[in-house]
Structure formats: C-alpha cells, structure tokens
Image (cartoon, rainbow, N blue to C red):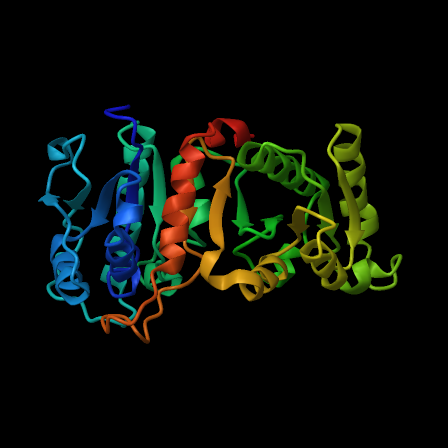
Length: 337
C-alpha cells in the first residue's frame, strides 16, 4: 500500500488507564514528528478525546470503521470501541482495560498484515490487567509474533550508543537458564541481520554469559560451555563477527567504550538494566523476526501519573521516528527467520 511518499504508521494506545494515550498525542503534537508520516491511532475515541483536551492537541479525524480511514489524513483515530463498561478509572489495573489494550494491538497489527499500514508502534500495556482477563499473555513481543504466525521472534533494544538483542525475555529467571544452543544461535543470527538492515554495516557482536563471571570455566554453571560457546562457534563459521561468552558486567562497559556494536543478552534484565541506565528516554524496543515492522516505547504504563498530564513523550517520539526509518530499509524482510 502506498498512497504517497509518506509511510502510514499504526499506533496502539496501550492500556487506556495508563499513559499510552497521553504520550501518543503529545508525541504527535510535535509538528516535526507529525509531518513524517500518516498516523492511525488505534484506540477508543472517548479516552483519546479526554486526553486531547488535557494535552491541547486534537487529531484531525475520528472514524469508527477502518474503511473510512482516508489515505492522506495526517492523524486519524480509529475508534475501535473496545471499552463497553463506561468510564475508565485512570491509573487503575482493570481487566476491561487489559482486554481493550490487547484489542488495540491486534487491530493495529492487522492493519500491517493487510498492508494498510507500514509499521506498528505500541504504547505500554499492563500485563497484570491482561492476566485478569484470564488470557495467557507474557508480552507484546510474543503476542504479535503469534498474530503473525512466527515462532522465532526476539526483542532488540536500540539507542544511539548500543544495541542489545535478548535470548529470552518475559519468563522467570529459572526458565531463562534453560536456553538451547539453537535459541542462542538464532538470536545471534537475528541480531546480526537486524543490525545490518538498520546500520548497513557489519556489527562487532559480543555475547554475554549466563552465569557470574561467565561461569568461570564451569565453576558457577556449565551453560557457557555446553550451550553458548558452541552457538558462537557455529555463528563464527557462518561468517558472523561475534565472540564470547564474556561476563556481562565488563562486556557492557567495553561496548559503551566502543569495542562492540551489538550485545547478545541471555535474559531480560541482563539487557534492560544497562540500556535504561545508558539512555532511558531514547531507547527503542524492536521486535525481530516478524513479517511486519514493530517498535515500542521502552517504559511501562506509569499508572502513578496517568491522567495527570505529566508524562514525557520523548520515548514515544523516538519509537515513532525509528519505525519510520525502518520502513525505508526493508527491515522486516531482512530479519524474518
């Protein structure tokens, strides 16, 4: 689908009781961001109208049927009418809001799968609220991959200084230690392909160990010896410039100082903590291995400030801009496993 030279980006507003609607509208109130694409905000009209009054920016058009979305309107709200139980209590964990948030993601992803949008950007939802619905859900990354029929997806965090791809994400630490050689290898491959697509250059890849001191030659665990090191060897034989496994504490320091471009983290917090310390406001979450482009903010619903017009849209601006840059690089095709 191409109605003009500008891409069309679908935005799911996340949990309607969180800051997702607010940061979405605040980000699009910036004329520089708004001019980069045609925007379809997927959410509930009443929530977005309330937030528009608070933040002082109103979308150009509200529609309740995707067939009525015009090809060249700057900011369109698709009022999906997922909320049917009356007003939303801002800042509260609620099953109805969790179900609505999942609906927004699904409908926005379907716009991409049907080629009516070129990328999806997701605002934060509450896993606790989704869990209250009885639905099995561990995160955007896995849910969107399932919608796309993809088995091998990965989470990539990107900022101007460093990129980190994760072997495991939304699972217990105990489950994260049960990694396979295949999963580590596929993570290296997907991270390599993603970096090549994004930066058009060969990355220097460092691979983290699972255990303290990367296992200290088996003293603190054998995952490095039995699983991670063999995967690195296969990747090297395929021509991928990677090395490790190294202790994560020193590896991140070396990467920030310029030795590596891309790191492979074994589990969620091993990658997230340093990246958020490095540049919280400008780190983008990208899903690899999908047939569509998906980026996200790298923060949560911030229920404590929801509805108070206090949320900072910086991370959302970065996620929106990054999605647009990806549409020009055949990114999804380059990273489908």
